[in-house]
Amino acid sequence: MSVTIRPATPADLPHIVRIYAPAVLTGSSSFETEPPDEMEMARRMKYVLEGGYPYLAAEIGGRFAGYAYASVYRTRPAYRFSVEDSIYIDPDMQRRGAGHALLKALIGECEQRGFRQMLAVIGDSPNQAASVGLHEACGFGVVGQLPGIGYKFGRWVDTLLMQRELGEGMRSNP
Image (cartoon, rainbow, N blue to C red; front, side, top):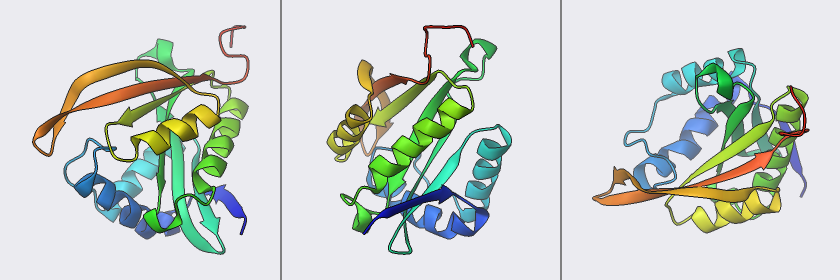
């Protein structure tokens, strides 16, 4: 079955909350400790979209498979051409191409919007290898690691930083 990528909408929020909650409760890909409810996720989606960033959904066979969005990397003005990506896939739909399709579409959307750098901040989790592989397959390279930057589940958690140029990247001025 092929993967369909489309803009995410508020109607997708129940699926987004359902997918994200276990990542918060059982994994360290997210550094949150309490899963946000649908109202909070709606607020976040609105912030992303109103900021001019893409928020995408993936479907496989008509079933919601995952979501991805780009958002502000840092708020200071000099970072305005850089974005951070976030991708979450329903565990039952993993390894079917949804993550790759979402990330490729997200990269394309960000390039069209004039962004020049995309960063992936990958938490220390059992899915880290899959996330690293996905990002490598889409042209990202490792640019750093933050050892013990978070504390979750009674242990210090690392973060891996990966980066990819978008469009002209640093080769020209925006």
